[in-house]
Image (tube, rainbow, N blue to C red; front, side, top):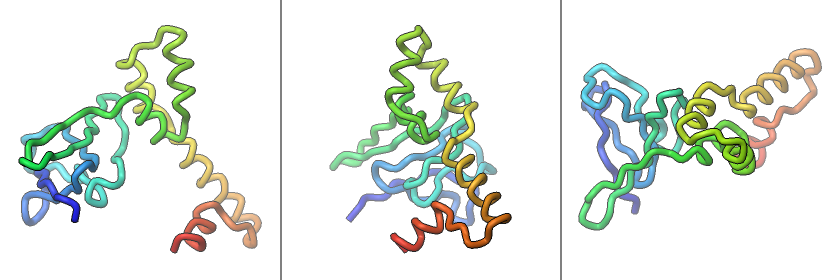
Amino acid sequence: MKREIKIRQATKDGSISIEDGGVADLSFPSSKTRRGRVQDHGTIAGTLCTSNELYQIKGDNNMKLAIRKLTPEEEFILQGMTVDDVKKCRDVGISDSQLNKQAGNGLSSNVVQFLMEHLRKSYKPDYITTDEKMVAQYG
């Protein structure tokens, strides 16, 4: 059974549960009006922003929390790029701080792919998009 951790969020209960090891947006931690801090109990990463306030939260057996920022590699993967892309950027002298901002300013290649596929489907109705294939395969 996965342990759950409560994150303050503007809901009826005042918080939302996140699975141990999940991701949450911890910008504005004392806000009582902020929503969308945790998506699908932390299994989905929220929107990457240039401020990079996405953190992974883990608890140990004594319920001490370990909170860490996502690495540039993790952020680039969320944007549909590879770890090799991060290595190439570092090789030319780009700092981790700058990589975080670039990932936050980026447009997810996966999103562009799905948009283009659905645009194609509007012209060719029998075309099957990647997300339709995934739903058919995994339910």
